[in-house]
Image 1 (tube, one colour):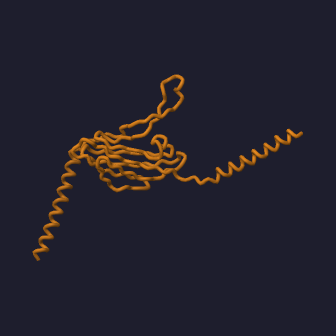
Image 2 (cartoon, one colour):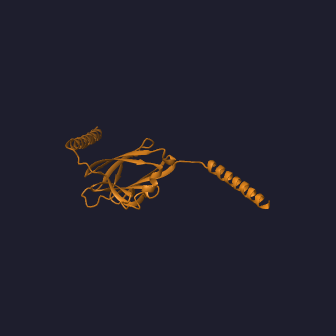
Image 3 (cartoon, helix red, strand yellow):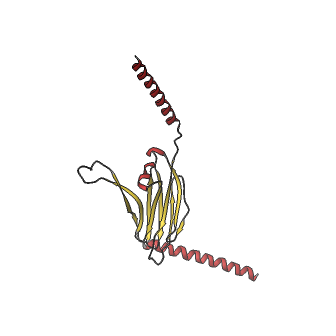
Amino acid sequence: MRGDYSIAKNGIVWCFVLQVIIFYVESIEVGDVSFTIAMKNEMYGLKRPSVVYRCKSSEKSLRWHSSRPKTQFSWDFDVPPFGNGVVIHICHFLSSQGTAHVEIKTLSMTSMLCGGHVCKYVIKPNGIYFVGFETYYPHNILLRFMELVRPVEKLVEPWKAWSPRQLKALRAERNRTMSSDDKDYDDDDKEKDD
């Protein structure tokens, strides 16, 4: 009889412990997952290595940012938890090598591929690279059902050369701003003469 009482007592204690654990888990506030995207310029060996880029999402629009080699720019944002939400950043890059348009999709589960909560992108002379991890499945018969992770530096978007139309528009814009600046100087000279 004593053994039955002990089993019942242990059962009641375990039920109580499980109820406390369940209550505690349900009371935890679930918030968004914080992420950071870091862009690093590695345009080494070029005459004009600077890059200008702008990224925007549905929640945030970043200004145009000018970047020189060895500099890094980063920004923070939040992603809904449990993979049920995606934050998409559309980034436009301009350099002496051409233009590039990159779409960065971030899920809460992306932290595994980023190596934490900082997703790193590198700007190089041949394009924009993602630096992190990728999942793969080994070809071994015994391991083919396992998903493994390996480090990677992957080309996301190569530079697209400037088209003649874009170059003509840039030159026209530069000439227009130069001529309007000249008019401002002419107006200043007239004011001094008066």
